[in-house]
Image (cartoon, rainbow over all chains, first blue to last red; front, side, top):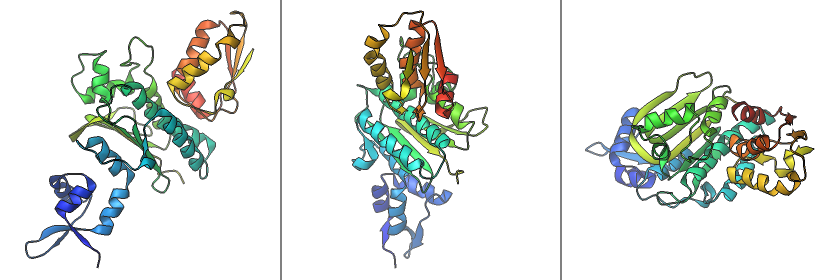
Length: 243
Length: 84
């Protein structure tokens, strides 16, 4: 029989609260096993090992946690140079199974999101500098995250009237605006949007307590307010529709 | 004159890299008259983003009156030029 873990131990391993685990159990995101006389929740160790390996879970927990676990060096780019080198590796991995057109666009989207993290947080990271960057060819996704200031704080410098992260994320994806005034820039996330809405890709992008989900042919932005907030940004680029 | 963008790299994503390309190319550009036609050739470029392009193409277009872009069929090049 598989080794069972208590809910407390499981919460610690994943880096989330026991309450979140209970919610995930209800919602089916991560099912527990009820056992013992009182029906306590337990988890199969192999399920949890697999879950931890899911890169988007690792990235989100790293972005969210007050005291993040040190990342595996394979998942972490402290500087742009490392990011550039890993991005080129992604490019070569992608070219093994898809066309140069698709390789070009996925790499450009990932490159723009990762570069944005460095551009807007240089000298201003909350604590850990650099970004989380990883990908899974099996699951057809690229994941990026930073522990920076987030879009609201960055854009508030030029648009003090912005009230929350949902407004900020909307502005970042629709208007040409940059928190690095007086420099002329601020097209990056519009570029990302222009590609995602034309191709068989999708994007989940979270900053603060706002989460955007964007897919092919979307005209309106689907932005939701979510319960657990992050300081920086977290992005998952999916391309599961590719053969 | 013709500028072969691939000589700056084939995965062109970041602003600092674009800015460095622009600065490093100044001595060459300074030898050219401002009314000369500049042909920018994207042949061989695999990935381009607006971040890189904004640091190189935007000032190039300000410095020279005639800037012609060729071999722009790569989809990330197309998407970048559409938004720049």
